[in-house]
Length: 166
Image 1 (cartoon, rainbow, N blue to C red):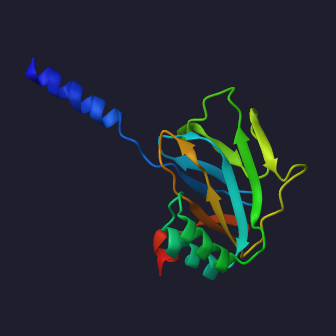
Image 2: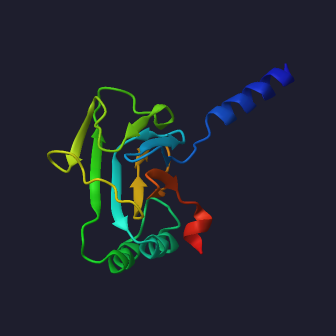
Image 3: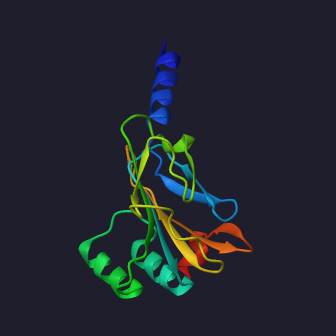
């Protein structure tokens, strides 16, 4: 009996653990955005192009976390300047479950049930070889982290925390 109760407790604890939502960028150009985590997608943003120095400065302030303070936002504005860096924004509709562990989104292609918010019309700007980009995927039922990537030899290459933190 005790073994059964302990087993049930362990199964419940393991299944109930929240794993932060983190975008993973793969493939060519345009890249495919997949996710690690247990949350549900609220929105998807792609920002850029940036220099590596701008991304490193941003990462130093936020450590890749999704939520920032007002002071951090001011520091980020100094790094990126007054140029708007938003390239693409999607808002999922309520018509389906947007569990991030099952999603695969190609940059510039709006999945069925999603609404493209930015740009309001047409395709987002193409991604530029050698430039750097940030993906943010706010989610529900989990915290979220940002993902960073570059386009190198017409392939999407994810930047590691070590590459951004130095």
